[in-house]
Length: 510
Ligand code: BES
Ligand code: MN
Ligand code: ZN
Image (tube, rainbow, N blue to C red; front, side, top):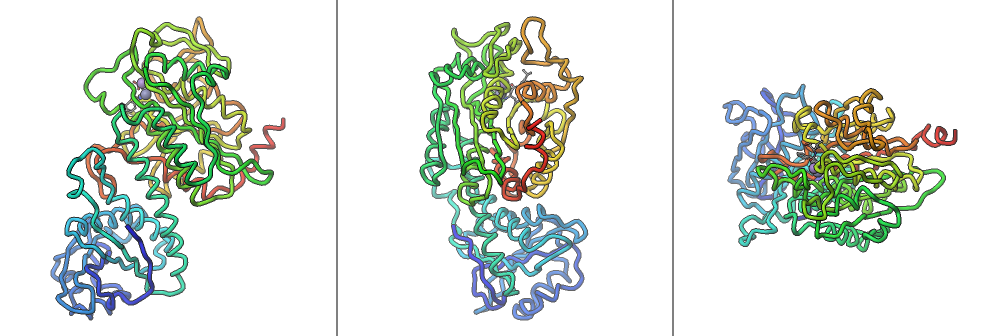
């Protein structure tokens, strides 16, 4: 599907349908719309006056104009109250309108972007939200359906119309970049939605190589013998019960330079989490095919980043394995040694994510990173604490946390901080090893993050627990039931907006 941008008068577009967004309870239509309204015979103003359309968020009404040489239909979509406008409401409204258009099978819709700035929401933000809303709402996972045609998107070209020439170039470039990001989100959703027996560690490693081939980023994957040489006891032990070989994916975009930062992105890639010998209950276990959502987000972010070419040095580290029970599986009570040299007492083999991340964090050290961000479907406790509208954030550096929080707000992949005070570290001390892999009944998300914190050295680090946000249970305006692709938009936003970290390197020299 194409997104095109043009400058012109809405009433002169002879398109199937033109989308017009409006606030709730507007008495008079905005002046920017008066010529379209006039050309349609007062259609917009009439439907407002007669309350056929009130402008509630995601409300729609389709009006046929029965006129030639102007849009054949006008699709009004509500943005809610003007005072509460946000980029996400724009994203939702664009998604809702797109679904209506898709339902009616119109091939060439347009949308009028008639405001160039509204209460701090710039035309760039609006364009980004609209393009994301359009493209993400059309996502549909049909890989395993035999009747694919019925579910296929029918829109060929979506035209965004601006009425001011001076914003045309800006809108064009933002639309193009956003399309790249949205495609990366859909790529991530696809691999998360796939069956666990298909999206194996080897499959993810091949996907990473494919990204590298297409974009020129560097990619290496470590197999069991390489991991043994490095002493990666975390991932090696988690993979013991599985007949799928583990893979450790290393992606590298750009190289380290004096004046730019090195950012390491780490994603948990457990391609199926049965719990291992500490087997999970049967109900809902199918969802654990998506326990590689962090990995998929890092791959998706790399796909976007390598196309958008930001200035920094970005490394992706993605440990991938299954967590399965078998005669050779890791057992509760076992003691393992991770790559950093720390020993871990295994109390529960279902706390496996932290073990593979421990090796990835230790591996990150060799890049002398200015920032390390890991994403993981790490704890059920995070869903209990924060629900499904936000990811949990924990970390050791205020500046980095602030940046991640900001990127989360901009992309509407919001994060909420939990504390990582030193008292909590006490809860994972072990009698017989350095640390243990569970922290008891309380504060499960925090003790999991403390576990990771034990492997972090002096670099700024943020951990995002995405256990509540990797899936949605029912359709929303721009996310269909299933994988959300969470993390891709946040990470890309964070990296595209990146400014050199001021204190990080200085601090390290001490
Ligand atoms: N992958 C799970 C966490 C999870 C649960 C993600 C629900 C998404 C939805 C993780 O590996 C796990 O099993 N965590 C355990 C940790 C516990 C044994 C300390 C949990 O949360 O129960
Ligand atoms: Mn688990
Ligand atoms: Zn897991």
